[in-house]
Image 1: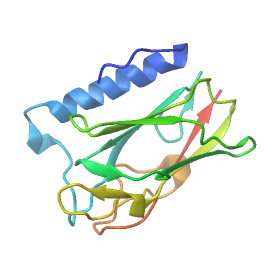
Image 2: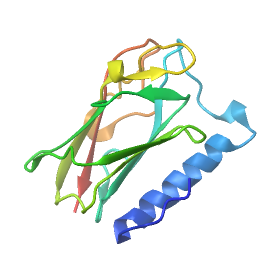
Image 3: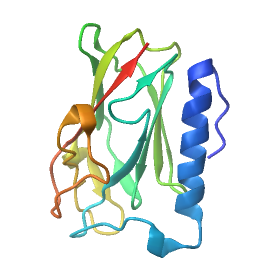
Image 4: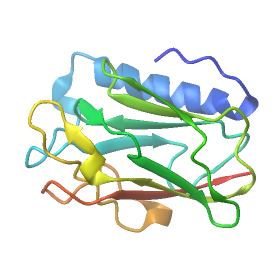
Length: 159
C-alpha cells in the first residue's frame, strides 16, 4: 500500500502496512488467516496493540477479507484527551486495509480504538466483524472467537 509519510511516526506505519499488504497480496493464500465462521476478522493494526509510537497521524487496520465499513465504525479516544474523531478514512479493497488519517499528530496519551462489529460487515456474506481481541492493552490478533459479532478493542500509546 503506497502511503507517503507525512511525519516521522508515519514512516513506521507506512513500512508495516506495506509489508502487511504485500503479504496479503502474495500468492501464498494458505499462509493468510481466513475468516472463521464466515465473520471477517481484524488481522493487523499499526501501531500495534500495547506499543508506543511517535508522531501518530495514521492508524492502519487490515482485515482477512473485504469488508463494507459504515460511518462511525471506528472510534478513537485518548484516556486524558478524549475523543479524536477528526480523522479521514480510506479503504483499500486490494489490500483489505482501512487507514485513519489525522491532519496533525495525536497528542501524547494512551488511546483506545474500537471497531464496532455491526458497522463492519463482510462483502461476500454480510456477516458482522468477529472482533473480540481480549485485553485491549495487549490485544490478540487475528480478532474473533469463531462467531460473527463482538467489537474489536485495542490500545496504543502516542508520544
